[in-house]
Length: 124
Image (tube, rainbow, N blue to C red):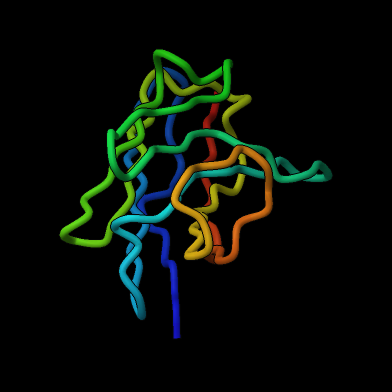
């Protein structure tokens, strides 16, 4: 059974940092697409960041470029999101996504597997 489990969320003041982790189990995602999404209350889940498994090229939502860094530990089957200079508008539930059907990342919500989400709250 494939599972993605996020951790690392919490409450932080504006300007602070958090590091999210996503541990995959059941199958290895080392050569498949993985990404982070987030969802604000009352809105659709939106793409935040993704990373190619082969060349480790990264892709980001414009509003997080320069502040967030996505990385992956293929040996450990873990995905990370380092979030710096956090803003109140970054407050959301953050989800890890993975897809064993595709190698290349996508920025739409058509991922096969999702974690349960972790709450990030940034106070002003």
